[in-house]
Structure formats: structure tokens, C-alpha cells
Length: 212
Ligand code: PRP
Ligand code: URA
Image 1: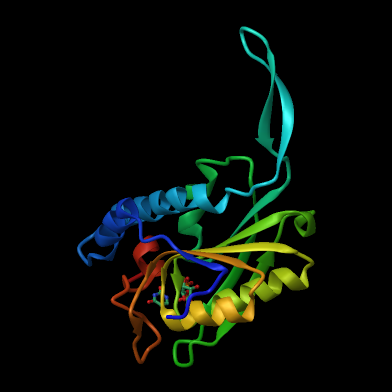
Image 2: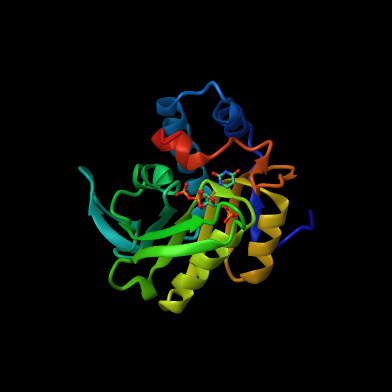
């Protein structure tokens, strides 16, 4: 795949180890959920490297010092329903005061064309960095439309984080939204005829919530 300036593929040994367990068809729902959360948490350290900070005064037991903290109301986590929900705690564990919005999208089973069915965003989202979460980036349709939905609501700074990406989908999002920084833990080989990622991990929503 071509190199895109706005794409970061982690390919990190700690993450690769967890992805191996995640992919395994024998991995049960509880462990699957925990792994999605853990991988998201590790990826968040990179994704939040440029989070807006302000300097505050802190009184330690010894003296008063200047210390940087992340600015209030500056970050919004936006999971794409359903599967993105599995990633929310991964960010919240390290940044509990982040606001949470939700965008509901489902792919048509035949065409893989996404449809938005829900959108509720935090007040003041226009001035926040929105980090959009979805474990699977397949054709890229859901991610592209969710990003457009945020832009239409005035969001200026958007990041997108996925656990597994297919080359086709990654290229589509990177080219359609060059202003969006994309973080993917693992780049897979291709899509199959049903628009599922190979080797992938199957249906992330079903594995997270036990619906199949
Ligand atoms: C899955 C996944 C992504 C989307 C990715 O959701 O969670 O949102 O497919 O595919 P794309 O890149 O081709 O758009 P799905 O539509 O199956 O809904 P669900 O999360 O409710 O199961
Ligand atoms: N959605 C999933 O959950 N898995 C895929 O492989 C593609 C889309």
C-alpha cells in the first residue's frame, strides 16, 4: 500500500501479541472485550501526543510548581456504534474526563454501503478534538461517512482510530479526508467478496456483544 502522511500503522510487538489473541476464533467474549480495550489504551498514548494542554500551578508537599494538564472540554471520544463502543473504556481509562458522543452506522449486508441511524454529540464539539473509534476499517465507508458527519457539525480537528484496517479502506479514508490523522494497529491483507477483512477477526460487533 502507498504511504500516506496521515496514516500511522503501529505494528508494535505488544499490540501484535494482543491482536494474535484477538483474531483467534477460540477467544471468548470477555477476553475479546478486554483486548479491544487494552489495545485502544496503548494506541491512545500516541494519538493523544498532541492533546491541547494548559499550564497550571500545583502545590506539592514541598513547593508550588508549574505543571501541564490536558485542557478541560478539549477532547471528545466518538465511538461508531456498535463495535466502537468496545474501545471507549480504553480511552476513558487514561483520560476519564473526555466527553463521549455517539454515531450509529450500519453497513448494508449486500452492498456494504453505510447508513447513519443515530448521532448525539457533546455540546461545544466544534472546539474539541474528536477521536472517532471503530475497531474495523473495511471498505472505509463507515469511517468516511462518520468523519463527514462530524465535519458537517462543525468539528475541525478529527482523528480516527481502528484496530484492524484493510488496505482498500485505509486508502479511501486517507485520500477522502487528508486532514484526518488515522491510527491503525494492524494492516491486514484484503477484503473478501462480502467486504470482510482477511485474515481479520470476523464480525467485531458480534464478538464484542455475543449477538452470534
Ligand atoms: C462494522 C464495523 C464498522 C464497519 C466497517 O460495523 O464495526 O463500523 O462494519 O466496515 P466499512 O469500513 O466497510 O464501513 P457494522 O455495520 O457491521 O455494524 P455493527 O458495528 O453494528 O455490527
Ligand atoms: N466489520 C467487521 O466487524 N468485520 C469485518 O471484517 C468487516 C467489517
